[in-house]
Length: 96
Image 1: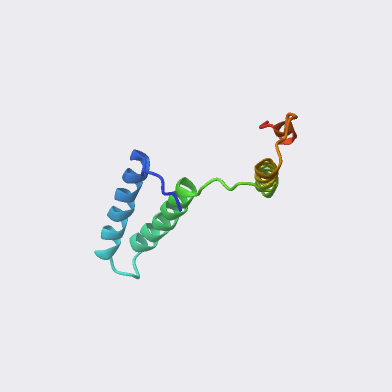
Image 2 (image 1 turned 135 degrees about the horizontal axis):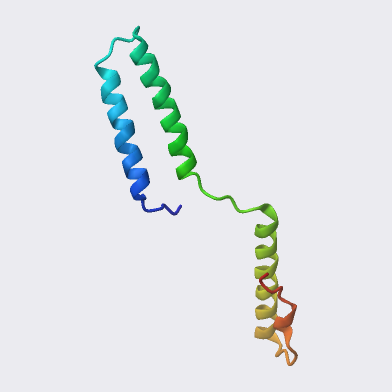
């Protein structure tokens, strides 16, 4: 949905990965250098995946947000029909 702007570290890592791939293209597949380069390539891809992984939102947080929004919508619908004279918004959970 939302994409992050690539950091300078990520751009440099992409360049290193491209260099390893170009180096591998010039090596015979059976050589030890090719095996070492492919191991480095796998390690670099794992590092890139760790750098680009996003932070997951817990299910508890999503449930709390949904409950607060549902409460706000119910209060607004009720206020549209009947005027609420009390502090009805105090029922909405506060951010922690």
